[in-house]
Length: 488
Image 1 (tube, rainbow, N blue to C red):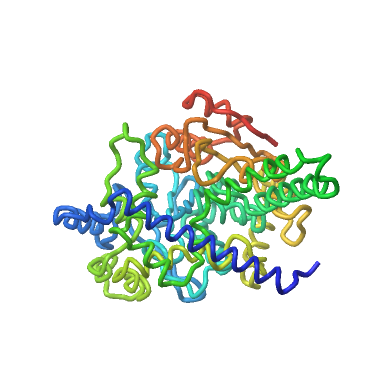
Image 2: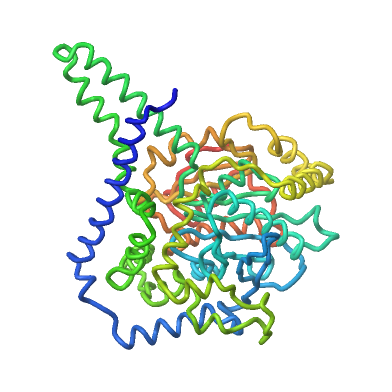
C-alpha cells in the first residue's frame, strides 16, 4: 500500500527532527563534559604526527611484519590494504573488513595476539572505501559491495598459489560495518569465502524483520484499546511496552539519523570539540584497567593519512599507483571532509539497497562457484551445493555461506532484541552464534574478546586447520561463560 503525501512528509519531518535532536544533544554533551575547553597540547599534536607517520607513511611498515599495498579496481579507484605477505604462499587467506570510525589499523591489537596465525596464513586488512588510505567513492551504495567482491577475488588470485586453489581456504572477518557488509556478502556472494567470521553489527534484513514484528504486535494491541478504551485500558500501556525494544534501539542508534544531515552538520560533528565524537567512540573500545587506550594513536587510526603521508610512496616509487589518491589528500587536509566521507555508508544504502551485480561480478562469482562444485574436497562440494545459489534466494537475507557470529553482549549500539534475536533462522549449515557476556561492541579491541577472535581465526585458518564440530566448546576454553545461542 502506497504512502500518502501527508504521511511521507510527516515521516520526513520526524526523521530530520530526530537527526537535529541528536546533533544538538551531542554538542551539549561535549559542552557538559568540558570537551570544548580541554583542547590539545603541543605534545598531543606532536604525538598525533608521530602516530600518523607510523601508520600511514607508505615507505615504512605500518605494523610489525606488515607492508602497505594498493589494489586498483575496475573503476580506477584504489583500495589501500596492509598484508604480511607480498605474493603467493602456502596457507589460508584471511581478509579483514573494519568498521566505523576506523581503518585497517584497528586490527593492530588483534594482530599481536599469539593465537593469530601470522606465520601460517596470508593476512590482508583493507581500508573500506572513503576510510583510511582508500579512495573516496562518489556514492557509498552497492558499489561498495562490488568493490569488496572484486577486491577479495583479487586477493585470492594474488595470495593463493595456482596449484593450491582446491585446498586453500578463504576466510572473511568483519566488525561493525565490516560485519554488516559481511552479512550481505555471505547472503548474496557466498562463493567469495569458505567461511565468514562476523562480530557485533546487525544483519539488516533481520533487524528490519524484528522492527516490523514489534510494530505489528504493538499495532494489534493498540487496536484492541481503540475499539474499547474503557474495557481495554491496560492495552494502551501494553502496546507502548511492546514498542520498548524498538524505541531503545532507535535511541541507541540516534547518531545514524544525525549522519544523514547536510554535509556542513556532519562535518562539524566530526571536528567539534577537538574531534570529541571520534575520541569518545574510540575510548569505548578500551577498559580502564587495560591501560591500552592512546588518544592520538586511535585518532590517527580513524582519520587516516595526513598531508605529509600523502607525499610518500611504496618502495620510494613515484608512480601514482604506489601513492595515495587525490581524494585521500582531500580528506587529509580536513577532518570534517574525512568524517563526512567515512559516514557515507550510513547515508547511501550500502547495507540496504538491492544489489544488482555487474556482469563482471556475476562472471567472477560463477567461476568461484563452479570451481567449488568441481573440487575434490567433499566439504567444499557440499558447501557449494547447499550454499551457492547465486540467482535464487529462498529467504530474503538468508546466509548461504558457513558463518560464525561472535557477539559481545554489552554492546551499547546494537541491542539483542532487534539486532540479534532470531538470527539463528538465517544461518547456513556449519554456522554458530556465540555470545560473550562480558564483551561489548569492540570485540576485536577488548583484550578478552580479541583473544577469542584470534583463537577462532586460528582454528579456521591456521596450520593444519580442519572443520570444528562445535566452535563454542573451543571458545569456552579461553572465555569462561561463553554461550552458544544457535548452531546449524
